[in-house]
Image (tube, rainbow over all chains, first blue to last red; front, side, top):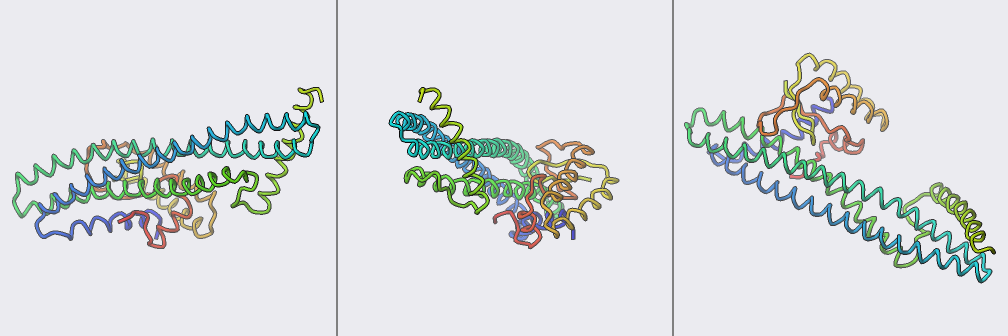
Length: 231
Length: 92
């Protein structure tokens, strides 16, 4: 079975649940409408969470940017005092800081994209809900049991497909945000402990590569500072 | 025929396209089975582009059932695996 057939099954199982719920089709319409409004609220909440996470990441980045200045001063102090070992240590930390700032910037951009997607989803869903409401009232006004079944089924099937679609978007956004929050909490802890150069979750190779990157950066920067300070 | 691309919207597409889409769908499945993430992404993207390029986007106020529902272009391999295992991606 192909991927789109599977996708269809995932989406349509939601529809049949909705259609089987009530005897009276009019109740199905009202219930479905209620669910749509709830879904819209959920989209709004998801957007709010994404925005909060983004703000938090921005705050962390600002903190690290401030840290950069501090570390720079420390490195200069160490050089003045002829303590190359110390200067190296500080510059290593500074480099790790810089890498983390880059990572945060990528994450902030991702959250921004997620936020825009959710806003689009909200707009589309609002339009659909409004259209459904009109349709629902029309069906109810012209209600005759015989044709209602068919019309209700059409309307509910169409909208519940949309709802499953939106549900997918929400699920994804939440998962992404959750991952980012966990990372962000871990980072807070690192910064707190001053252990930014020991970022976890990387394997041996990644660690080696980062170390190499850090060391090369440190050598260059040490030379630069020395030249600037005439040492 | 009406095709819904999840997270994107619905398109009205000529029925002739179905054969080509089916071919790509089969390819996607075998790439998924072999765990080829890059290949999977490329073919899925081609698949969705084909719908987009050959279809007309439906007005968001239209409420109509789709004949075909396809995953979003940026579906990851692990999400696709969930779809296949029947775990589902949409919370109840």
